[in-house]
Length: 368
Image (cartoon, rainbow, N blue to C red; front, top):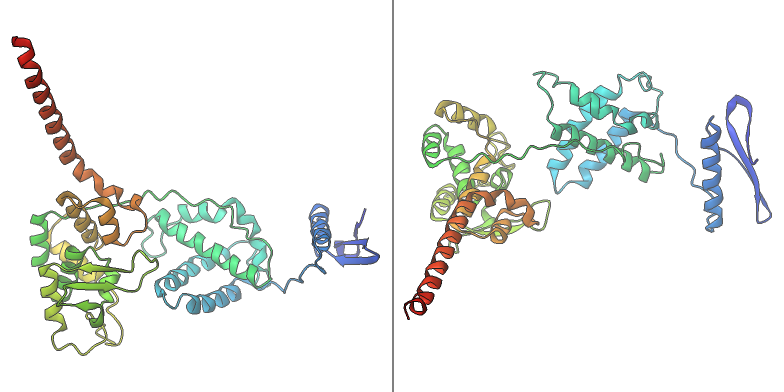
């Protein structure tokens, strides 16, 4: 057997290949793992490689995440929301991982999390509530944290630190968080009576164009052509989301008013720094919903409202997907249900007309 144990309980391997002796430490104390490493080394030699790349010293989780976030900030510079999501997720990951007995010591390494390939993190986070509110975490939140952990290990693997992602086989939770709250026209009037001026304009643009809130936040004057009544959405994660939209009269009115005498880079600038877009209007929206006493409504639901109204007006799903910035038509199938009643009504009228036509055609033959 080419695998043998030496001082300290570490297994080594030794064999000859094409007249050359190879003798090397596997770095593990488990015989089966050592044999796997030896076989991998032999495979590399048989493929014509000179050997296996030496693995770098494995850092701790905190230092690994620090390097990962530095890389993420540069890698996702065009999509800062991705980097922000990673920053938030790493906080939860550190709080959990550093409490485990196997990695509590600062000397423990990133590779020591291989016990999590069975999904212990997923189970623990699903049962544990939020730090401040103690509310149960949504499956989507846990999935984003798992995605961050996978991205972290892929980053480490590319740096030749570890050779296997221990989270690669962890299945994500079923989110089932599809929400399509639609604002009625009566609720719309009540809601807009309680909105602040900035929120009123942002909400109106979402309702008139179907744009995502962050797409409205980042509108630049050069993206708008009031003469042609169009607006360009230039920045998004997918090509489909980078689209040209035609503006309604109400949307043109809002943009024309806000762009008159505008001296900032964004139509909706941040109050603290006019060089940046407004971050969010969620607090103002929540106050407006509360003061208007309508049923709970997310700002994003205004986009769902636009899409539902568009489908009910007769816009086909392919066109609707393009206007919403979706790359797949499956993503707009949720908006098909409001049109089903209308479609069934049309089918019923068609069948009735065909039956009448058939009856009238057969009537002369019966009278002869």
